[in-house]
Structure formats: structure tokens, C-alpha cells
Image 1 (cartoon, rainbow, N blue to C red):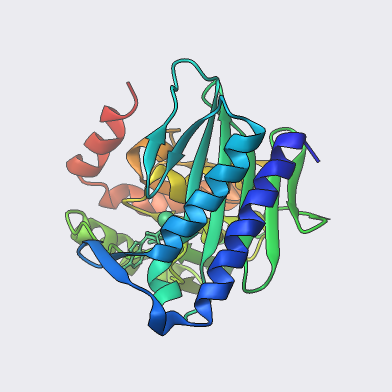
Image 2 (image 1 turned 90 degrees about the horizontal axis):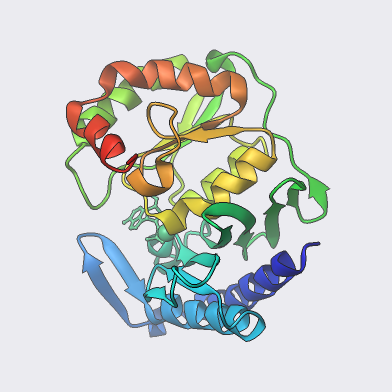
Length: 275
Ligand code: 2AM
Ligand code: CA
């Protein structure tokens, strides 16, 4: 295992332990609201602190982009940036709904090179190193082999905070439901993307994500032989927050169903981030 991935795994497991311990006493948690239906607990903060401590004690010069504490370090000076979501699926966690994960990715000179998504409930550790493949625990991952959208299980996320694109999103959903065998919405985007890498889903799409929700999942998918892009298939997903991911055959078919429902506003969001 690449030494930087080993450190990331150590950090993810440490965060996982904090989260699991707290999950046994959910009633004791102090919860606050960031915005509408966007919650944060002290567990998010404690897990993030533990991750950053492990990463920075190994690599003190690296910079950080993390969900709760934002940016740390100088991205101009450091070639390395860790992108961290300490608890992806906080709402699920707070409800005792066991679909949440820890997500840690590393960018080197702007390119994703290491990825970890850890599910503490199933003890599933998804890892990837650029050029060296994606793994679930010690098993090599490949995206699914399905070639017809009609045979596919597709994951998504419903808008929960920003409802600007609700109508366009619902039009995509309505169009996709009868064209697939089913749509799922568990609520941890990082874990959903890991499931695309593992071939559990054949594809996934969502609007309005943050880079820490997606960074690790994107590398897992490409290293498992899948494709990731924005709603037009371009490479702006980390900036625009609009993402489509799938095995290579299904990727094109998903884009085709989504295309008629793209609004000027959705396209504009992808253009702005391209430059
Ligand atoms: P978070 O728990 O780290 O905030 C899925 O739609 C993504 O949106 C998740 O990765 C989740 O990340 C985020 N999210 C935040 N609030 C949510 C909510 N109320 N319902 C669903 N997802 C939410
Ligand atoms: Ca998240």
C-alpha cells in the first residue's frame, strides 16, 4: 500500500472509532443546524480533528480542505491537499440509520492520487491509489458489467438544502425511474460512489454536492474502471457539485436521459467552474 494511503486509512479508522462509539449514545449528542436540514454534531468535529491530527503529524506541510473546518495550510506552497469529509451522512447518523461513512482523498498538484471511504458499520474499507486500482478491504474492485440501462440499479441523492434545481432534478428522476430496475437514495454520497466502484450500483447522479462528498469516490470509480463527470460528462464535478458516475456503457446512457432536462442554470454552473 502506498505510504500516504496507509496514513489516510489510519486516519479514517480512527474517525470511524469515534463515530461508532458516539452512535451508541445518540441521545447525548449536541446537534446544531448549519442551514435548512443540514446538521452537524460534535462527532463531526471530533472525527475531523482526529483525521487532521493523523495526517498532519505524518505530513505537516500538506494543506487541508475539510467539511467542518474549511481550508488550512497554503495550497500555493504545498503540492498536496487532503480533502476530508469526517462524517458523510450526518443526518443518517443522527437518526441511527446505518448509512454513513468517512471520506478522505489526497490531491497532488491538483490530481486525485489517494482515496479512502470507510463504512464503520460494515467495517468496509474502500481504497484507491491512482494507477494501482481500487480495493474493498483486500479485494480488487471493478465497476459492474451491465450494458443496458433497463437492467441497472442507479443511486442518487434528493435535493435537501438548495431547492433551486428541484424541478430539473425531478424531471430527471421521473424519466429514469421507468428506464431502470430501481433508484436508491441512502444519503451518504461518498458511500454511494464507493458502491459504484464496487459494482453494487451501475450508476449514480446528484446535484449540489461539495468536493469532500465526492473526491475519494471519484478516484475509487475511475480506478475501478468507471467514468465520472458532470451532468454533461465533462470533468467539472468537484467544482460544480453536479455529478454523474457509472460503468462506461451506462455512463453514456445516463447522460442521454439527463440531457433533455438540463436547464440553462445547471449548464451555467458547469461553465463557470470550467474556466
Ligand atoms: P453530509 O452528511 O456530510 O452533510 C447526499 O445527498 C449528501 O448530502 C451527503 O453526502 C450528505 O453529506 C449531504 N447532506 C447534508 N444534509 C443532508 C440531508 N438532510 N439529507 C441528505 N443529505 C444530506
Ligand atoms: Ca458530506
